[in-house]
Image (cartoon, rainbow, N blue to C red):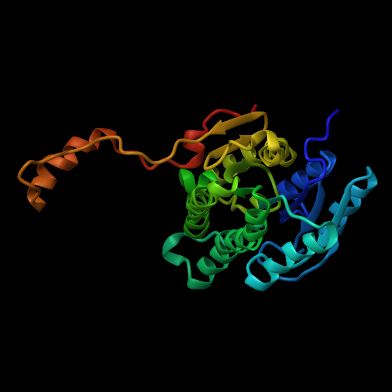
Length: 304
């Protein structure tokens, strides 16, 4: 079978377990040389170990793949630069970055503190920026390259107790689109995937309510390794025309998400007053208002 990433160098962040590990292994199976980045910390950010990243590297090497361990933090500008530098030093080039590293600090909004918010934004959103910005000059000089950023239906649709995570994941969508627009002239592409998978991070979601227990039952059926094939497909040369898109992967399902566009218009030839907005504009638009959906309300069928 043809190796579709032969000769490419791919960085996968948060690749010590779960979705990232699956992507790193599949990229190596497809012929890529892989930088396996993972801090090896717990979900709350405590501790650090090279063990998780090294375990992924060992699995890749066991089938003859090429990979190296990296334990730098994506959340810091200098260490993100170091991750890309390692790829260049070891393998001479960089062809793709998968921004998968993440954390959770789930707290209902009126109890969320500044640290809870900043910690999640720093890893997900700032980390995706740091990594993408570190790779961008090299992609530009080679006139090729691919970014895949992990977003979430928590941001695209909504979930309880995740104002920090929802904000970060929607921010990543905007970041990806901006990269796609700015880098298109250099043949660099940028896309998002909302992965559905039962991982260590998902396993921290509270189950102390009937709603939480039902959510966990569905999550446990979602296989992390199922995210890897489509992610790797977006990194191939065959997908060179795919950019600025938002996808979802849930077990054997692949989705293309819509993006915000106007759906109704209210016009007043004489302009608007506060009262006329209340009397005319809002009632005109109200039939098209979105309900306060949560992710599981939209994805109401079982994974297939």
